[in-house]
Image 1 (spheres, rainbow over the protein chains, first blue to last red):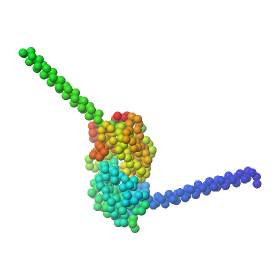
Image 2 (image 1 turned 180 degrees about the horizontal axis):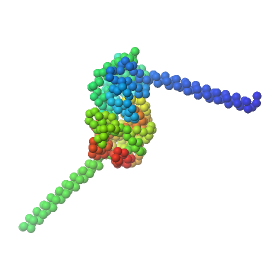
Image 3 (image 1 turned 30 degrees about the vertical axis):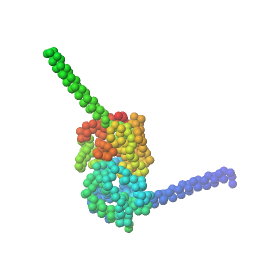
Image 4 (image 1 turned 90 degrees about the vertical axis):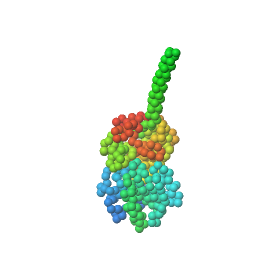
Length: 183
Length: 211
């Protein structure tokens, strides 16, 4: 075999290793990433959407609004959708016993300008935090529930200019949502 | 005797006029010093990218801009939204110090994080108790300085879409004080207050001039 043939085989082998490496890295990472994202989707069953509200997707989160179509609000705040319920989820890497120290909800305990009232509670089997607070950036009010489950948290937040209009159905919704998570 | 009386009367008139003049000058000085004791802001970006959503002046439902136009934002908006690109530098609007900062929210989709403002900075201005808030910042960028100089181009963070935000933008909000007794539209106009909180409002496209 000539010297040139050796070189060609060596180059081909090197290319094979590089392409194989890229393929393995891409597929392996993609699978992991997909699995990770699926676990963090805030899935809402159609059956628990309260009457008169419509379910829409906001990335990996869900928003319930009073309109069938989700308006294009461009780059602003979701208060532009009007009254809404926003459901999202994420990784919980704190402890409920020491929830004040967990950064993701740190604002609840330190922001006197926005937070009116907070309390620890229990929704079915979930440790929960209920927070009444002013909207950041708009004149409406929020009631937000954080539900904690092992390494995840689930957040459901009602926003309205007049929170009393929807309070009962929102709290019923939170209960049904917790039930659907438990099942 | 009559001469003395005339002189006393003349002196009284002069003193009266002098007192009146002093009162007028004092009133003017007080007015001027009161007028100076208001913070005014520079545009907190290097140039104006346009405004996506304006402050709402309509009590109850509906929207009213500072010019009284009924389009340009949503019901209840209490800030001014500048849509721009991720990572763009945000400058302090006026001299002051950061008294509150929130960081650690993802750059997008982090609904409710930081109370909805996402990563943000609250700056209390030196001249008065006015507070300016720069919301939805990029993770890891909110500044934490006790003294910031507008003229030195102090920066407070970078643009993103953290917290309750549907896209990259700077939400600028003014509070009367740290306790958010009321929100202020920096723009003056027929449906807003008479005095602008911009150093140069420039017909709705504020400039980067500091106070």
